[in-house]
Length: 282
Image (cartoon, rainbow, N blue to C red; front, side, top):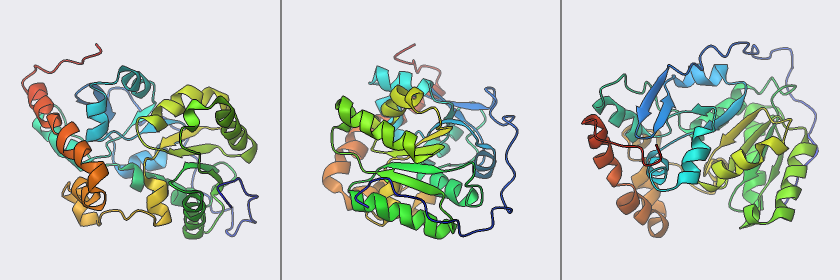
């Protein structure tokens, strides 16, 4: 426990009933994009993306990310280095309908996608083995690890670690984390340490983890899966008010983000509709 890597237990499901290994990268075509401000977001349904994802870096842009991308050039460059960008936000999905292009077909929230991915590959652990990096406390990382495997009925998560604050600025700690991941046997890494830190860390370090085929940036998902932070009910998410639920839970931390930093999003979308939006980094 304590967030350290554990030895995997014996498999509890018959490995013959594995999902078919996707041979096609046909879905991930550059032309199938929706431009939202300075990002081109992949336009797939949840099921399409889940069933065909077999490699690459996955980021899930929301309103807060899109606003940070107007001010943080490094974050923008990191985002453009990702392989897959899927819409995390119902607000972004709805606002895409205001623009003169095909709208985003479905919200693919990272906090839904990642647990669904683990469940989908529960009988495919010869190929899909997940390492969790993140969580508020080591016990939360361990609890999320147990909960995912309990629901999957197999050892799809084989390692986890809750890094200390400031780990990304400590070369020795970073190397320790890289070693844990590489020695774990994982092929999928889910990093949940908040944006933009998690995205920047993945792009900066992915070349040091040659066995990892899929990278997820998952924000607060580890805490959600541990039960440490309550996620909004699905009906609240569907009507685009998950941000209000989060703000009610953590008003001191979330008020500035949602009510000040993110509000200019709607003005920028209006400018894009009029053809007057300009990418600050173009």
